[in-house]
Image 1: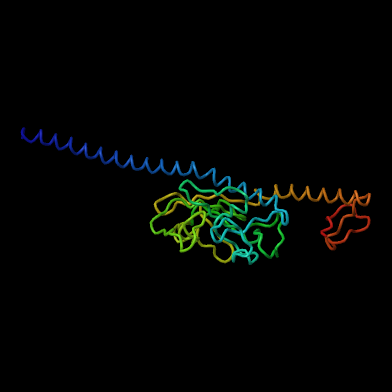
Image 2: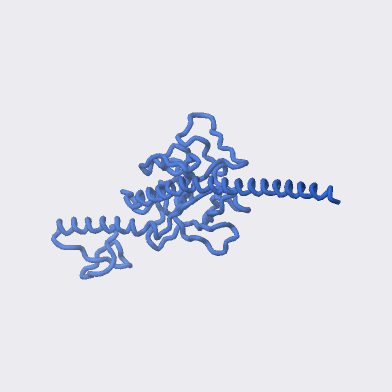
Length: 283
């Protein structure tokens, strides 16, 4: 009995040592993973915020259609081209790369070095044909939720979503196609950059109303996103439109010595004699 006690003691010490090594390895892996994610977020979140600011500034300063956002970059050249397929049909939501050249900003990359992606609601995109007027009562076509099981969305009526795709995950193929390389590199297939979550995915638009997911970073999902709501967009656009209206009214007064009468809802294109309160003449 006495000869076995030291052996049992040694075995217990060895067992505890092995357990300690396992616990240290688990904690080190967890902390390393958390540190890597924290580092990625620290470098990515400011880039997403800069992209959102650039889009809002573009919409407010749009010289031909205040409030309209650019189409997506469909071929990786940084340009929202009205001849590209996504931009030829009005009111259809679009998903592609962020058109950084069109926005007049440097190329933006997330913390893994990937260029940003961008979805824009079809009724707010500056397509080659504009059929739907926009105002502060018009919502966007997107919803953002934490994940597919969330009962309460983070936001509805969302106008645009900007994505940081993050590093390559298992199953992604970001190989470039044959031909000249684009500034962002890789390819233009959103399924290789934006991730599935449950049975849903951020890489597929659907026909009309679409839900995107913020998600929790994991081994199978690492998208990070930021979005634009009507509350973000319209205060800036309304200030711009107000400045345009004030300048036009002043020009009218300078030319005629008086301001025009208001218009009625029934006849918004005509000034109603004696009407001092109503709509601005639309033409």
